[in-house]
Each structure stands twice: as C-alpha cells, then as structure tokens.
Amino acid sequence: MLLTWVVSGLWRFAGVAWGAGRGLVVLTTGMVVLAAGAPVGTAVALGQVVAGVARGDRGHAVGWAVVAGVCLLLQWLGGALQRAAATALGERVDARLQHELMRAVAAPSGVRHLEDPATAALVEVGRDTFRADWARPGRLANTIGGLATGRIILLASGVILAGFHWWLGAGLLVAGVWAAYEDRVASRTEAGHHYGATESARRMRYFNDLGTTPPAAKEIRLFGLPEFLVGRHGETWAATMQRILTPAGRRPLIATAFLGVVVLGGIVLVVREAMAGRLAVGPTATYVQTFLIALGGIQQSSWSGLQTELALATLDRYDEAMGAIAPTATIAHGSQPATGMPEREIAFRNVSFGYPGTNRRVLKDLDLVIPAGKSLAVVGANGAGKTSLVKLLCGLYEPNEGTVLIDGVELQDLDTDDWRRRLAVVFQQPVRLPMSAHANVRFGRGDADIGIAVERAGAKSIVEALPNGGETVLSAEFDGGVELSGGEWQRLGLARALYAVQQGASVLVLDEPAAHLDARSEAELYRRFLDLTAGLTTILISHRFSTVRQASSIVVLDEGRVIERGSHDELLERDGTYAHLFRLQAARFEGGPE
Figure 1 (tube, rainbow, N blue to C red):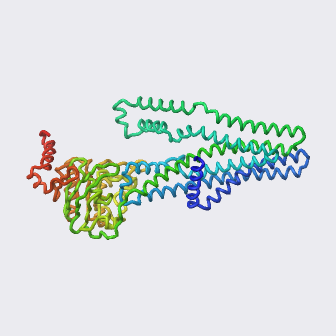
Figure 2 (figure 1 turned 90 degrees about the vertical axis):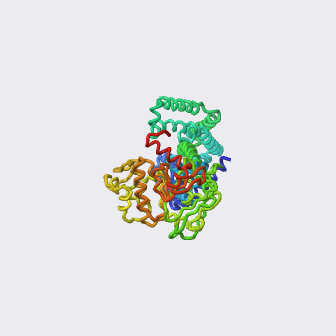
Figure 3 (figure 1 turned 180 degrees about the vertical axis):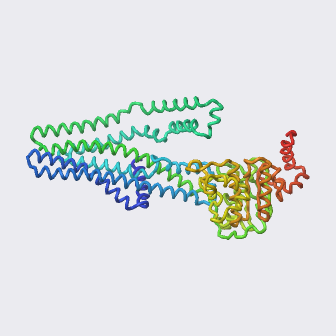
C-alpha cells in the first residue's frame, strides 16, 4: 500500500514538474546520474592509482590520478548543479500549484465553497502547503534527487562488489535497503513532530502563538494566564519528547546490525584475500572504498526517502483541497448584459436561503421590492438576514428557493461580471489591502482621478496626513507603511464606493460601514452619502435606527422575513416592532429606561 502511494505520488509530481519546466527536469535528472556515478568512478580510479604505485608504473598511476581528479570535480559540479536545478524546478512547481489553487478558489462566482466548513478547512490546508519551506510540494525536486542519488550509489556499489563475490554485492544491496527503510520508519514520529504534523506539535504551536501574539494578549494578561500557557506548553513538550525518545524497537537495531556485519565482514574478507595474495592491491583499495561510499549512499537515501514521504503527504493534502473545490455548488454565469440596470426595481420573490453546513434558513419566503433610484434601509436584530440579503443581491450565493429579479430578469441570467460592475458595496469590515491608499480606493476600477471620491467620503484629511500622501502603503509590515484606525479604514471604504459610482456603479450598498463611528458621526455620514448618491439605488443596513430614518423607505427583517415596511414616520405611527426598537434606542441617549 505504501509503495503504491509513493509511486502514484511520484508520478503525479513528475507530471507537474514536466509541465513546470522540462529543461530543468532533464538537467536535474542528468545531474543526479552524474552526482551518483562520480563517487563510484572515483573509487575505481583511486584503486587503479594504488595499483600503479604498487607496480611502480608511474604513467598508470598519474593517468588514473587525473581520472580520479576529474571524477571528484564532476561529483562537486554535478551536486552543485543538481541542487541549483532542483531548487529552481521546485520553485516553478510551487508557483504552478499556487496558481492552480488561486484559480480554483477564485473560479466560482460565489463564495459558498469558502464558507462551507469542510471545504474551507481543506482550502486552508492547501494554502498551508506553501507557507513553510519544509511543507512545499516543490521540495520533491530536491528530495527525489537525493533519494535517487543514494540508491544509484548503493546499486553501483553492489555491482562493483559483486565482481569480488556476487553474494557480497547482493548482501550489501539487501542490507542497505533494509537499514534505510527501518531508519525512515523510526524517524517518522520525530519528523512528524518537528514539521508540525502531529497533534502534540499543533498543540504546542497553538500555546506558543496564544502566548506570544497580539490578538489574545489583553485577555491572557487580564485573566492571569501567562504561566498557565507556559506550563501547558512545557507539559506538552515533555510528553512529546518522552514518546519520541523512547528506545527504538528491535527491527531497526537488527537491520543496522545486519548492515554492520555485511560492511565490516566484507572489509575483513577483502583484507584477508589481499593478505593471502589472492587479491591485488588495486582492487583491494577499490572494494574498501566502495563499502564506505555505499554507507554514504544508504544514509542519503534514508534521509531523502523520509523527506520525500513528507513532501508527498503535502502534495496529497493539496490535491484533496483542489478536489474539494470542484464539486462545490457554484453559481451559473448568465450572458445577458446588465448595462443600465436597474431601471425599474430589484425584487426578491419568495426567497429562502441557508448557509452550507446547516439546515437553518436565514431567509424564509422573503418578498421584497427595491425601487430603482430610491434609498432603502434594512434593519433588524442580529441574524435576521440583513447581510445575507446583500450577498444574494451581489450574486455571491444563489437562493435555495425563490429568485432574485433585476428589472424582471433573473439574476442568474445576467452576466455576473457585468452585474457586479453595477454594484458598489461597503461591508462592515472593508478589505484592507497592504497597498497604497490610492490603490485601496481604486480597487481595480480604473485609474481615474479619485480626489472627488476621497473628499466626499471625508477621507481627504486622512490621506493628506499620510507620510507619502496617497502613495503611502497602508501596512506597518512594509518600510514607510502605516496602520489606519478602524474609522479611517471605513472612510476609505466609503471613498471606494463613491469612486465606483464615478466608474458607472448604479447600486450602492452600505452594510454597517460606520460601526466604528459614534451615532452623531454615523448619522452625518449617512446624510451626506444619501445626498451625494441621490437618484441611485441605495441600500443601507444599520443597527442604529436614528440613522436609517433618512432613507426613502425602511424594512424590518425578523427571522428572515419582512414584517414591516414604510417611511420612518409611517412606521412610528403603526407602533409596531420598528417603533418599539426605535424608542428603546432613543431612551439610551435621553437617559430613560431601556
């Protein structure tokens, strides 16, 4: 089973490597043969040098000394070129696989595959294979080369020794393969811990990250947990080391002993034959060196074999992640242009929707019409379905039941990319690109002037205060870069939406983008925003009822359904859910009871 898995994985890697760089594959293979054959050639040549010296044949000795020197040079050159070529090939393989993963993850027009727990976990594993040098599948270019070099050296050594006694060559091959295998088996536990593949290694990394990284720093100190984390980390390490350092079983010891008997016994036999005059001094030197070279090949194949197994395991996890993405339900791409939409309305007809991995319906038989060119505010408790409604409108998900219509056309029949160019959406946590402030505003929408959008969003002073103005990188991880506050990022997010309007967007969605602002600032922001976007279809989502009152119409969601709709004044007159919640919030600012 293991052999089948290894062969299958090597064949899979060979296909990827050939596609990534045929010339590098050929060069690496040639250098493997050269690096493996040169040491054996050196042993043979030195044996002839000794023979020439023993006979007093200066020409023979000098000639073979030159051959030995060339073999040593080729061994060094072949090894250096092999490492360089294998490293370059590995980088190409990793880049190719990374591109494949990025394309596969980005290909579905929706995000269902990323929010499905099982698929998301595998995608995370797929990304992890490229985050550390030891885990990259491209390492196989080096490890396979090392494994092949060690095995070729062992095989060539066995062939040479078979010229002395066939059974000695066969015995060396058997002992070498067996010892390398048992050493690899015995090292798997330690390697798994070292490379973070075991549960205890992951637990140790978790304790270390928890105690040394910023996200949990405040809670760790406030609850007095530093010593607890250090203690748990130490206990886990001690328990792990006890398992790893447990004396090896009998089989590795027997395999090593058998190899020792073959090598030492073989050397003794060679020396005895030479002392008895039955073996010339040249072959004697060749055979003794061959044993030593074989030991190096065995050691190399043992280490490289273990590394190859670990790298093949990461390639397996990568393939599993890729396989999980493909069958995930994706959103159909329509072909009808969305230019000028919506002219009349956006309509949700009997829409029901639930997220992957759960049977709960976030939206239930939702009916909602959003007139084009008007502003609509959506309010409701957490989990009422507000953000889910936006995701359906953006085409990130398809409804489980019902349909979303744009001017009477089903959303799934529209060209997805064309429809999304009609949208400008600002979520509660706008994406934060570690790029320039200007790039964060343009966000792939062309290179037009962004000054008006930045000023209208109230972000002009923020950009002007940056060390290099709009060209400042918004990340402290880069030289000259800076970090922005949550409120400043939200201002840039709003500027991004206004810039999208300049570039042709006709539907604006603000999904609680002002959560980091106080109530007064948020109300002012919405007022300005609605003034600036008058005549466009605008959807506002907020928990603060004092801000949404400015919208043309307000809908109240409860458990995935619209339970109330009307203007702010109309909803207050009805004295329903909206009026009750509005008064509760107002009471906080007036100092009344909740």
